[in-house]
Amino acid sequence: MFQHQPGLLCLEAAWCESASLDEAPEFPRHILDALRQPLESGRVTVSRSAGSVTFPARFMLVLAANPCPCAQTDDQSGTCKCSPTARRRYLGRLSGPLLDRVDMKVTVARASRRELMADRQFTESSATVAGRVLAARERAAERLSGTPWRTNAEIPSSALHSDYRPSPKAMKPMTACLDSGTLTARGLDRAVRVSWTLADLVGKDRPGEEETTAALHFWLGVTS
Image (cartoon, rainbow, N blue to C red; front, side, top):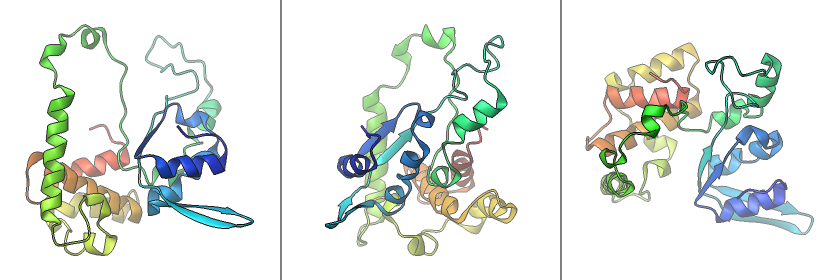
């Protein structure tokens, strides 16, 4: 768990393989923005008067946030009383530069009664999903054999946009968003990596337009 003191935040981030921040906008903005560099470089440096120490800090970060401080949405009989200003202030703690480094942004709807009461025997087990993820990681490791990298996340940008760039047809959704300014250079890198992971999950040799479009939608936070 991350603490609210910057020094402890950095030290604990160095030891975590994954971290989950529930109600992320309730954390002070400067604490959240302190995650930007570790997410980018995979390292964190703690500096003090006596010197500085650099720690490894490659971790998976999961941020969860409600649409507003009261956690009630407008579609729930108008129970939300938060003003537009309060909503902007709440979500504004998740800065643009931080969200730029978030690979996938997903809106999760409140579970319906039908979903809550459904028979769970027809849903996939965690073991089934874990097996699919393991197969995808093995596929990526095989593709990257002979290189210093083992996962799509480790591929440097120079190689990502040369040896591992999807086909021009597959890249069309991303290049269109680059031209319109809705996709940043950092977002392009992250979306391309996610498209490779999506291809690995379904057993494809390279990402197609379906994978690049899905990866782009994940980065933009588009639901459909």
